[in-house]
Every structure is written in C-alpha cells, then in structure tokens.
Image (cartoon, rainbow, N blue to C red; front, side, top):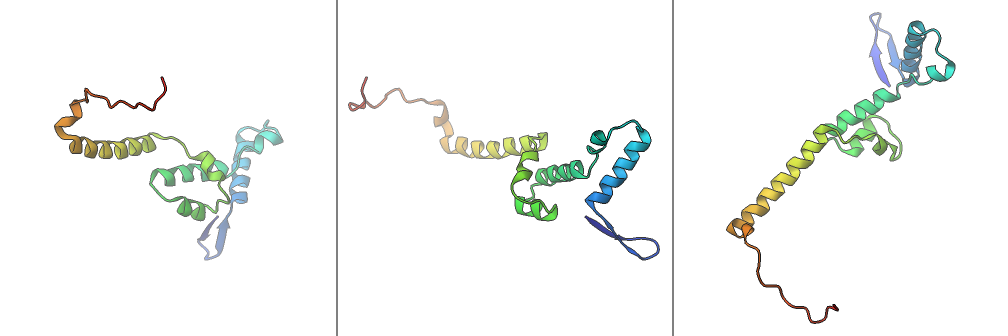
Length: 124
C-alpha cells in the first residue's frame, strides 16, 4: 500500500486492490474481449514479486523484505530467482575464500602426496 497527498491536500491510499482495478480497466480498454478469468491475471502481485527480487539482489535480509512488503510466512522464497546478480555474488564469495586457501597452501598446492597411509581395519 502507498500513501500520498494529492494536489488538493487530501490523503489518498494506493492499495493492491486499487492497483488491480486500474490494471484491469486498462486491460479491458485495450482488449475488450478478455474473459473474467483472463482479467483476474492483472493484479498487483507481479509488482510485489519484482520488488522482492530487487530487494534480494540488493542484499536485503529476509526480515527486511517481508516486513517492507508485508509478506506473511515463507512463501516469498518461492519467488526468489537465481538472477545473474545473485550468481555473481555467489562466485565472488567463493573466489575470495578460494584465493585465501590457495595463499595458505602456497607452493604446496601443486604437490600431491605420493604415499597413502594404510588402514588395516578397512575391508577390501
């Protein structure tokens, strides 16, 4: 829901229902032959999902996202996408840790042991 003050100073509320009403009226105007079921597809939900994905890409916490978007329960997780931004964050995080491990190994990173301890308790 959004709240704003119009030019005459009246406080107005922009709710999901109002967004749906406007989107459906535009759809009817452009496509007068749409059925009731087809019109129901026009709602504020896709906008909320889009904002959720943008907040996730920006690194916002689940608590922040669900509070700001008034999302109940855990269903928001179904909409989080594996976007290119998320993939790059993943690769960057792994790269930093991999670089640190490679520095710790130093020159030994290319050397594999040529002796393997024998475990007499293992069955063949």
